[in-house]
Length: 323
Image (cartoon, rainbow, N blue to C red; front, side, top):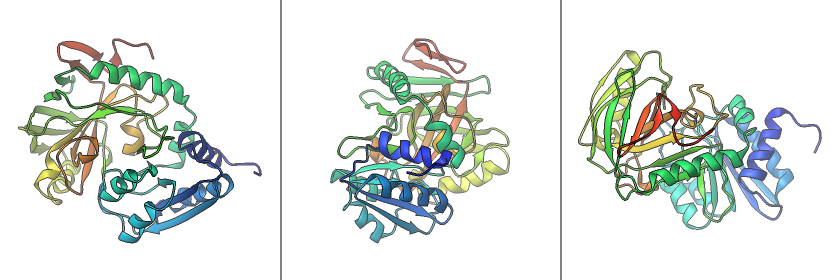
């Protein structure tokens, strides 16, 4: 290859090191009009790394979890590797799930920016894996998670026998899927068994960085009250438009990427070390029961987190591992 830009170098790392794209394989890059430059960069780099690189562009989706066109869903099943630099996430879609079942490796990159690609793909992924696996090991036998913050968060969720998922962004095995880049451990809390108050003070999918905190009261797993400024009003609409289950708690996650920075794009924000996130909506992919075309993550900064009675994070700092 000729001299590469920083973005092109990040694309090489993403495809070769994280996705394990091999010379004999085929690659499909799915993008939209808002993400065209990054999509085309991955496509061009793909041409140098594998036997066939294909680029398909769709109209930008309205919400995370909305299905791509049928034609693209079918094409996803016919290649070895798919990467999705799109405005909205395709992670929690039937199209992604069906292609994964057939052994396709899929990396989703919702809302990724050039800055995020360059920054996060410079991380030592072995270190991200080490941190993530240590957190997941702690989480395996836990029955309840409690989150508190100085801002007023106090929420309790039941997770007994719900399997934690380690997302490192390294997706080299048949059928693996997840965010690229990544760095989080997450799971689906039990439906109907999350209660309390959450003060989101970082960012929210579809809103970006929060201008002021958004407080959500949760009862029996559902958001029953949303308070805050103008962004809270918009979030209320986002949580109700796709249907009732869009405001059901679908995910709890912990960021484990030491290179990630709070930037307003949830792909990177939810990976920030020292933060946790709670998502509302679809969680079929992670072993839950909520099936709706919406998945909205909200970020909580500097949380104190208890796994059962053990405090594993104090004001955003892990208590059991040096990072």
